[in-house]
Length: 509
Image (cartoon, rainbow, N blue to C red; front, top):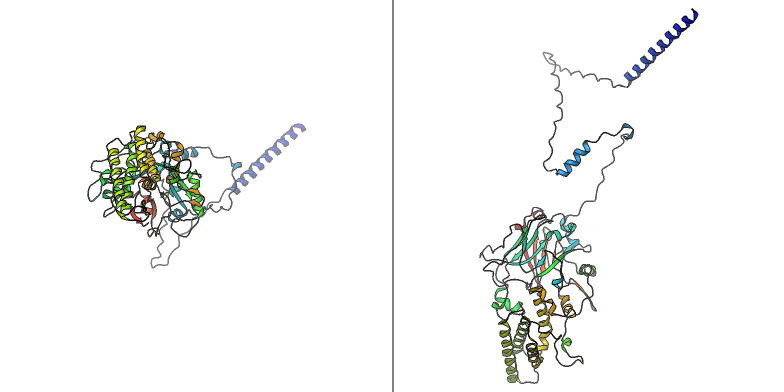
């Protein structure tokens, strides 16, 4: 009996302990839950009728905002995948603390200021037949994506001349200042006639990956470049009809260079800029230019061709003959640097007249043959023997005539480069270099360039970007009165692709 009483007592004590434990747990939980806030009583205003103010309306729940149509498919997929991930366990969550200030990146320089510290220079490939496949070149004819057409003069309706095209994908991204398009091509056309007005067009031919590029045919009615002044600029021309509609084609590659800090918007002429151009050129040691001494014999005497194969084609004969005609005309107008000091006036005039007539005859004969047709060895020897009889004049023109003959053959038909020994071709490379080192120092004239400081006074520099500058360069047929042509655009218009708002200016020599 006592055992039953003891068991019952133990049972009663255990039940009471369990009830106490449950009561304690419920009390602790109740203490942890937030107490409901008592609704604020609306304040009563004293009024004649002591009427109560209406209860405030409950705040509206936030509305669901639809997805932006500007979000990319890839970004949307990433966001949805992140939202679908399970929540992290509570133990891995950090306690909230003081919010850290957002990291601030240095403000990007304004495009106008940034353009004074860089340049996208157009490095010419020389010789052009070794240029890799690319879509950037000076002269020639355009090859553009999309439906671009050859533009015409807005006043006369005549086609403009093609100056250059740049494949924008070849321009380094950072050099575009965040404004230049990164696809398609930039093409520039100009009325290459030294008359009134400066008609031009800058075209952005839009393209995308996989879009075909198509060649634009030379339109009918395209005038001779430089019009009536063609004989003054083309080495093979004596009259305007001997000129050309198409400027020499030279492949280029855009290269970005950094320029030293400067407060001036003008192109910096200093050693740092010269070094940057040398680095962009990538070939510091260039062969020297041709000189009169190169046409002397091994003993420094005589008058000999530079290599056995000269003249290599009929355009070479035409160029040398034209140079001799012009030199005879010059000598007949002045006695400065007289080639025949021992002759009296009549003898001198007769000699110059004979040289001119014979040179004109060779010119006419060359003009009647295919320009790049090879010349038989007997004809080559006869031409040089004739030059040697007029050495006093021929020596004055032969270095430049040979340079022009090599360049003309190379740009007219790059595959004809095999006509020249490599060491001879290398003597012309300096005319197509960004910079070259000489015993007197580095020669680095302002290059053709985009988004860079400008030459000259640059009155538009405070408000416009220099989109492009092309300096006078006879080696590639750019004859701009000794100065440069500049195309300007505001940062806003460049960002909006408003190339119809481009402004062109000229600098003096």
